[in-house]
Image 1 (cartoon, rainbow, N blue to C red):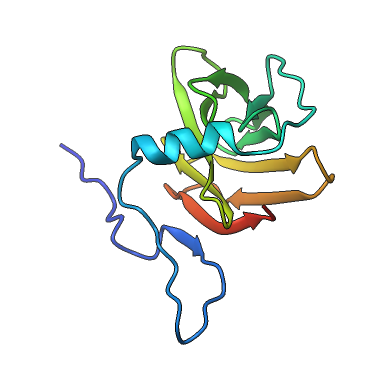
Image 2 (image 1 turned 90 degrees about the horizontal axis):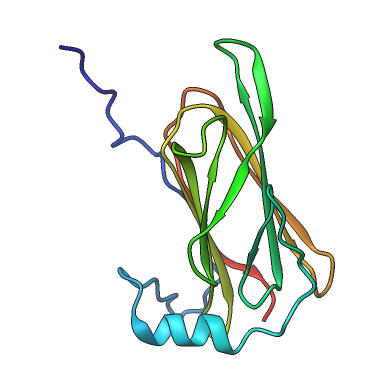
Length: 157
């Protein structure tokens, strides 16, 4: 029986908002009903248009897409989008029954965070677009990594 590589290394990528001596960023350990209500109700509506490869999150304000590449067999493509809620979605790469990546956008009132988690070690690049102002942020995972991330204060409120 094979062994899994240790994920204890610096796999989770955190980008936290800047803090002052008197403030500390709060990162909830779970998704509470308050955050769900805040996330879905207070974000300004956007113009995202959902299609088979596009997640529209947080009142259609954020467009999320992913491109992937498998260096093992030299295939690549655009991830298929699967909406789960107004703030969370997933992507598959080749098979709709095999989810490879999760994405979530949460509005905390003073900041908007972007979270992603992988179920694959393929190379991928996530592009998140704020449709209200056109700002785009990208997040890249190199092949061979099982990584996810959190971008605290990813987008302006």
